[in-house]
Length: 205
Length: 205
DNA sequence: CCTCCTAACGAACGATCGTTCGCTTTCTTT
DNA sequence: AAAGAAAGCGAACGATCGTTCGTTAGGAGG
Image 1 (tube, rainbow over the protein chains, first blue to last red):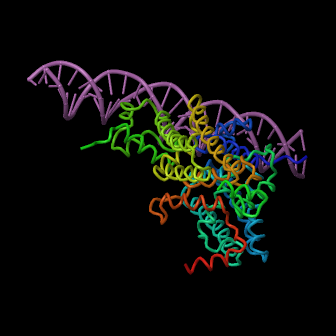
Image 2 (cartoon, chains in turn green, blue, cyan, purple):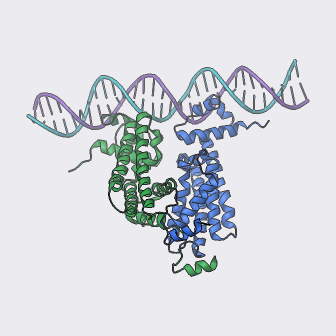
Image 3 (cartoon, chains in turn orange, purple, yellow, red):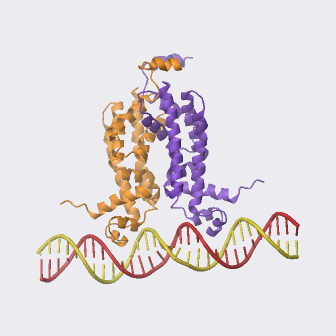
């Protein structure tokens, strides 16, 4: 019988509540009630409310970094790196949607050292992604005229917004979503010259 | 001497504080202090905390809708519609960054009827944008093989994420940002076949 | 000058917040 | 069964929350 340790239950439940109502709108008593406990009992397992938030954010940040670091350091072709980075990002978000929502929404509730540490991880992640984009441009597989900062921002927009609309019961699997993301980011939405419908496109233009 | 009415000052200041700290982390006394008032004095002008949030969100939602409705209803070519919609969205976000931040971040604090009304506006906005995308596909200027829902989601991701990184003192004007958004959404980041030669020819001109 | 009206105020209300304390219950180990 | 540790609890703490109340200050219009 593998019973999840209480501390893990607390973190998981807190991630769910924080993602639904927000950190400040969730009280310790709310959290306790969800676990059939009284508020005071939580303090047998954690030191305070902010520690719970920190544990959620720390794990999420590590998941993002642990996923992209080996990709960025590998010797894959640049386009494969980008594809793998997008796929891993989507997997982290969809793998724990509640934690990802807290990651994007509630980090501002952190204070002092923890907040600085979080932002440093976030910055590092974005920097690694931008490095992959720049490799792609240098290799000529990404548009060399694009601004790498802006291009990275576009990719981050698409993959970061995912937590806002993804639902596990939706029609697309995480990897399918990642595949479509990559295709749209690379090729865009515009009708392509030379496609089957190119004739029609030209005629209406 | 045009002195801004107190109520407007309250709403503006609240938008700034809510966008920085969040709705629940901003107390009425915090808000009052920012206006050199005491907490009780706010209630001469507003009925309660949630009304302030509502006024911010209502205005923001109306700005988004007022901007896209005439565009969607116009007889512009589909591509121009999309370009105009993206530009107007970017203008709304950049025109009042604090309000836009509250719009995207703090609407969950609304309850009951107001929450439902807000979501209805949001849904209508996204529906209008999707209509523009579908027109573009029908006219053949947007990839007819793309899923219109997914394509709209991609556009929304890019323009909605803007509030996360836009700073008025940044190098790009709102219209420049919109122009780059449109270009990247249409053409993507991938290097185009035959680009180098065509580009070399153009660069000499 | 006097009267209104509005804006601002000090004080207080009940509620709830995160957290602590000492005690009891439950589980583990021998 | 005894002993020790871990987990949970009731009660309470000081702080702060949104809000209300009765009153005061100050300017506008007569």
